[in-house]
Length: 333
Length: 283
Image (cartoon, rainbow over all chains, first blue to last red; front, side, top):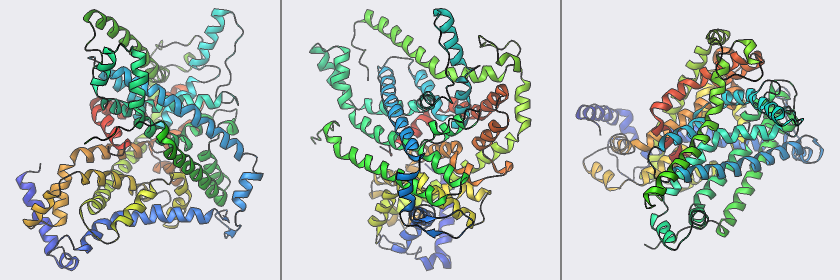
């Protein structure tokens, strides 16, 4: 709560504004709830920014997707050509789409499963578990570029830590296994990028799950215990269904996030030879390339709308089918 | 929520030990990249390429930090990141809370329609807005300036939505009473609603700050000179130039991560709460 002095200072300030000619013109001096001009005034700064940097660009990018424009020439209207070219002629776009779908299917389930397991372990009410929460959440606050550099080094083919484990394993067992070129190999590069992403974000799903678990009444577990249900059954029949609204929420936002992966593949696989670009290229990476490497603004805009379309359809689909598996408690009050 | 509290005491201890072991293994996996980064950042160049790799460097090569820090103006990157993140945070909290106040506690024509448009805009992924925003910035002559780094990210339908949801939960009688006493809307917003929403404001401020601090794509696109780079973009160009000098790269990564991690160590509760509350849309 503010102190007395602050109160007086603010009140003098607001009074001055209110009593000024400008304030009177706006009606601030005799304000009442019906005074709409005041409300619009509150909205104005936000609305101006919103119109200029959200609504205008959204409409602009839709319009741009029907043009061919290389930044320096005059834009020419090409109708649906950008979209048609992407979906029928561009040999890279299907790969990019496939890569992104791979990322989504690799990253999202891992984040949900590991995040839930961490949360369940930390929700047992034992003392001294707070430190683990702090540790598991640590990667969330780190910079993605720095983290991607560290993982690039961890997965360096010749000198990285992970490769050294493979060699040690080969030495120990006598099997002839070689570490792959993790970041340049068409097969391994995507899972490697996924590992970084899961490590970086799993702390987030964990804390959201922790909040969800707090809402499950303890009596349910008690009753199940009395009935002789073991830990697995309690997890399977109480925790999973009752935490399903959280799972649903995380599923949607994590999918939206995974579809927009950019910095992770960009930093990890752009530098350092191999050029596995088509193997790790995500949709947003491809938008970036088209816009800022090839100056194909129209194509880039069209890809972004295809991305929006995919996210939109999947989200609507999930909202539509949530009833089949998301367990909402009946509000009895 | 203690599911173990009711177990017999003997079993309790055994289980607790097993749980701790599992959690410690998990911690080691999560911390391993940090250890490896730190270890490499202190190694001499020849030790980086030894097999099997060493965890503790034979000699601590502190010089790596000196080399990394002088190779590029990291102090400038830091200043840029701090300045931009703080400015975005302040402007966004300010404009969003004003708009949220209007949406939540004032009546005006078109309120629900405008709010619906805000909500609809939440669904638009940022990449859709990227190119037109870039073009707008170029046309405003903001390319490679702080304006470009600060102003477009400073407006968020999400923050407005989040604060509006929070403001809705406060009793309307407060406004009524204050109004009876002759308080203006501005006064109600600043002296009543804002102080009562301290937790929500703190949560969203941390969320905005961290997101801006760690943002990569936008600053990458709108800057081209070294002195305008933020930490992530500076680090990215550093990686491009020194791409096999792993000790220097890891020293730079430590420099990029450490200050945030130190702040996190002291204020972890706030970080986790801030991100969790914002991430859940204020629920």
